Length: 82
Image (tube, rainbow, N blue to C red; front, side, top):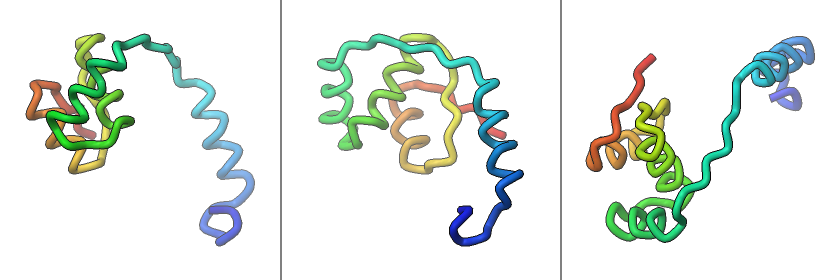
């Protein structure tokens, strides 16, 4: 984004500072269950991983990806809309 002058260096730094404020929790999930979701939903592994994390934690999923929204909802994961 900086290369194309879509944001300034100050804006990029502000984004990084905001990102550092997000509490990140590492979640250990069964990769076998993730692969089962991949096979069942025909989605990418990283999308299945996010869905599995939401299922394990019982939390809604925040995404703007319509495909991920559809896949998550099909297995009962709630979507957090903004």
